[in-house]
Picture 1: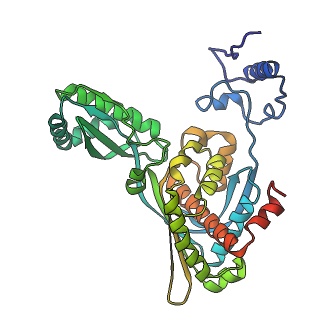
Picture 2: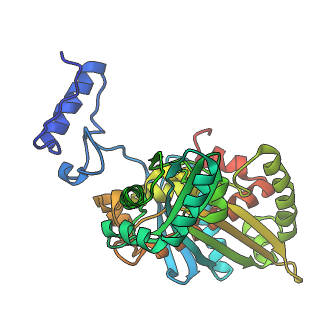
Picture 3: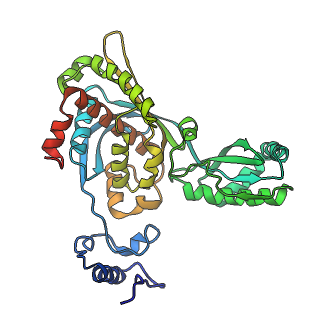
Length: 388
């Protein structure tokens, strides 16, 4: 039997072709693909999202809520779908949502918005590279006009510049509407770079990405300057409420934060919180986000304080939350259903989704931190998780 995966060049997104590939894989590996082959999605709808389609990976989907969000775009109570195979995760986030609702909800703000492509231009020497940087500043308007010919929703906001050796790294920062925008800004920047090459003499060559956009990789640059949405979630919780619901105290949580900050520093962590990646990943899978973006999106800065009455102020800043309500996997049927649960499908909804995810992350943070201090972190996994 041929080891080449079956493919139809004319129409590859059919149930017949999916079945042929499942049969092929089963024969090659002697494995059953019965569950992979059971789905409600029309294979034709997966064009543009997958190649060599054979079926679906069915991740369990749970619901938390009501989660009370006091956002500028998301206002009111939401029931948040979360896709995960980790026992206790949904229960923990649900407990956090209950506490936050009792405390009056989570205030969430989208502080900044930018998506990058970062080309690098190479010259004969550093002075030529420096002079080129001045020219870029003087010609920003025309560069932006060229970039924006490729998109109706992307706008070039600014270009940051970084010099090293005889190279000039340009970090093009765009707003991208309701799309995550990586492909959008790649195309726009390519057109702008080609115009630059045609209009500025002395460039030896350029590369469309010089790695300073750090696509699907964490970077301190993104923590400082934002990639995707910069989201801040914050809440003040009465101490008595923490004792009643979580079995610990505001003072204990506050002191634990100081200890954890030191531990995070020693570890070289990109996150001063507990586990923002859990909530972000689970909502990403449910709503059709590009899950690899968790590499950037999970970076977080947690800050806590006690007021004069001993109440607990907690905030989490997510500097690189890359989300979309249009394009990519958001158009797939089950992902559409999850987005519609949140009223976050389609145009004008991306900041709303970002605020809901920010509030969801907050629910998980307060729940896990409390569980660790109250001593029920391990026991909850014994009761609900795989290690029972």
